[in-house]
Amino acid sequence: MNRYYGYLVFLNMVVNVFVYVPQILIRERFDGAVNAILLAVPIGMLIMFIFIKSLRRYPARSLQEILDSLLPGWLSRPLAFLFASMYMMAGCITMLSIGDTSVRYISPEAPLLLAVFMFLIVVCMAAAHRSRQILFLIEMILILDVPLILFIIVKAFWNRSINWDSVAVVGMSYTHLPSWTAISGATYIFSGYTNLVVFNKAFPKPISPRWIWLFGPVGLGVLISSFAVPIGFQGADGVSDYIYPWITTSDSMRVELGFIERVLPLFLLLYAGISMGSTIVHWHVALYLVKEALPSSWSLKPAATWTIFGTFAAFTLIFAFLFNEQNISELGSGWIRLRFPCEIFLVLLVLIAALRRRRTV
Image: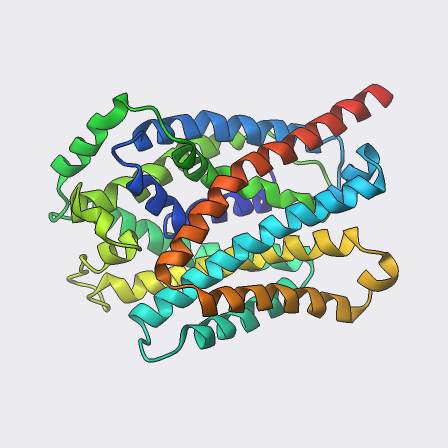
C-alpha cells in the first residue's frame, strides 16, 4: 500500500479527534453512540474496500474522467460540482472551527473574521500546489504532530483524574440503536480515502487494498479515544456543557516534568497544524474537481485557481461573519449528516463505472 494513501486516511482520522465527531458522539452518548462506534468500523471499511477495489480499474484517473466514461457531460459536470461543494464545505467548517478556537483560547481580543482570514491565506497558497507536493506536506505534518498527539492520548488514559465510572455509565447504553447522526459522525473518520477522486492521478500504480484492514483497529482506537476520554474527565452529564470537549479536557491535564506544564497550548498548536493540513487537502480536491468540470479554455488559466479559491474564501468569511460558535457547531453536524449519503453515492458511481469497464475490457 502506498504510504501516501495511508497518510490521506490517517490525516482524516486524526483531525476528527479534535473537531465535530467527538461533539456528535458525545451528544448522542445515551442514544446509540456506543453501537454507532462499533458499526462504523465494518461500514467504513467495507465502503473503503469497494472504492479502492473499483478505483483500480482507473489507474491515474480523476473522478471527472471516471464520470465522463459513465455519464453524459450534461450530467457528469453538475455531479462534479456537487462533490466539489462538499469538499469546499469540509474545509470551510474546519477553518471556522480553527478560527473560533484561536480567538477563544489564544487571542480573545482578535475578531473572528481576522483570525479566519489569516488562516485562509496560508491554506489557499498551500492548496494551489500540485498534488504530489500536497502529499509531501501532509507527510511532514503527520511526522511532526502524530507522536505528540499519541503522547497526549496516552497521558489522558493514564491520568488519575479520569473517572472510568462515567465511561462505564455511558457504555451501558449499548442497548440503544444508533441514530443516523451518530453513524454519520462515526463513519466520517474513515472518509479520507475519498480524497483519491483527485489524488489518484498522483499515484502512477493502482493502490492495493491488501493492507487497508489496518485502518479498522486504528479507526476503532481513534473513535474510542475521542469519545471516552472527554467523558472520563468531564463526567457523563457534564461533558455535554462544552462545545469543544477535547480542548477542555486537554486543559485538565498537566505534564509535571515537561518543558510545557499545561497541555492546552501544545494541544492547540497540534490541532491548528492538523486541521490546516486537512483543509489544504479538501480545498485542493475541490479546486481540481471544479477546474476539470469547467471548459479547459478557462480552467487552465492561472487566474482560474485564485478565482475559485476567492469564492471558497468568500463563503467562509460570510459564515464567520454571520455565525457564532453554536451555529458553527450546528453547521458542522448538518454537513456530516449530509456527507454520508453523498459518500455512498460517490462510491456507487465509481463501482458502477468499474463494473461497466470490466465488461467492456
